[in-house]
Length: 187
Length: 187
DNA sequence: CCGTGTTCCTAGCAGTGCTAGAAAGGCGGA
DNA sequence: TCCGCCTTTCTAGCACTGCTAGGAACACGG
Image 1 (cartoon, chains in turn red, yellow, purple, orange):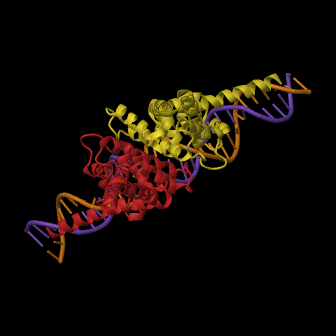
Image 2 (tube, rainbow over the protein chains, first blue to last red; image 1 turned 60 degrees about the vertical axis):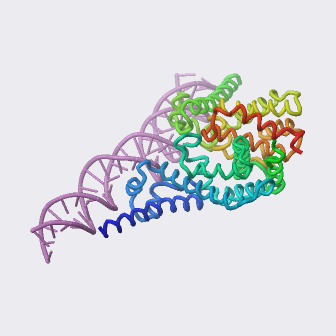
Image 3 (cartoon, rainbow over the protein chains, first blue to last red; image 1 turned 180 degrees about the vertical axis):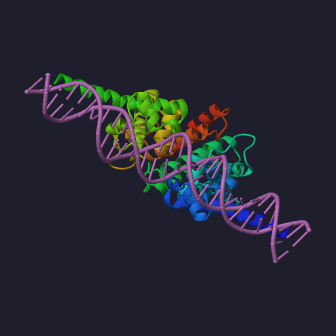
């Protein structure tokens, strides 16, 4: 019994290490550098071990990183907004969201560009809903405003990362976003 | 002389055919299916010919498709908005932008996810500026509002393509975007 | 018609994701 | 303590990727 438990624990550890390593490698050198061989090297096992944990292969590993990212994002947004409402809440949301994306570009890429996670569907994981809920709450509980607001934040994060809007005017842009999304003004 | 001209013309034709074929293939089967071998097959030449036209290889071909896309987008937006201003202009812009993205998902992907084109920089190609100008004009000539508005449209296009906002409520969402971005209300 | 210069293709490299089959290891029972 | 079994792990290889060196074939100008 004990040895079985130990093995299960070791297996779970390794599972987590694969995800963590993929994330590190991606954040260090970009997702192109995350190959099954390099991943196997870093965790000090051979490639086939990866498939024992993730039968779906590399895609499933990326999806796992993305899911972890969504969990973090949901928590980050929730604590950042706290009890705040109105303009304050929107400002906290905006800053937290854009800072999150800027500080973990690779994870954010996995979340929105790489992983094909089921979203506006029935089998959408709870974590994915939680993030949206945080946005919705900060924007006054309005579903449509939440969708549009999320799109704005996501678009801004994406365009910034690609260098398609200037970095210098970031602060002003954020204020402008808050103006637009403030539920008191929005409708 | 004549033969030289003919050869130059043939070369230019082939250049265009490579771009067009890459675009077709991507729109048909996704960018993963666009390999140098398949591309070479379709234009009925061998792989190395591609590199004669695009020394940068596949990346340069994708960038060419993206650039073509930006040209189309700029024209589409400009004609769609026409002389309209105020709320009408914003509505025309919103519809034109989102329809563009939805009707050519692969090209849109090339433009925003695949190609690394220099944007908010000095060497930004004219075509790229033109698209932004169209957005800016429709939003009353306000730089910051244009950036945020563009982000909203881009975010919405991206989230829709990934199925992360429901398709059913698309119409309402667009109206909501127009409400938000209407320069008369925005400030 | 023939040498010349360009155009083009064949063949191959290193790297990718993924997997079949063999080897090694630890386990429970005697 | 030893043995046989079964799980775990690795080695080796597949088909594919982007890309390129080298030689063959072609069309051209004289």
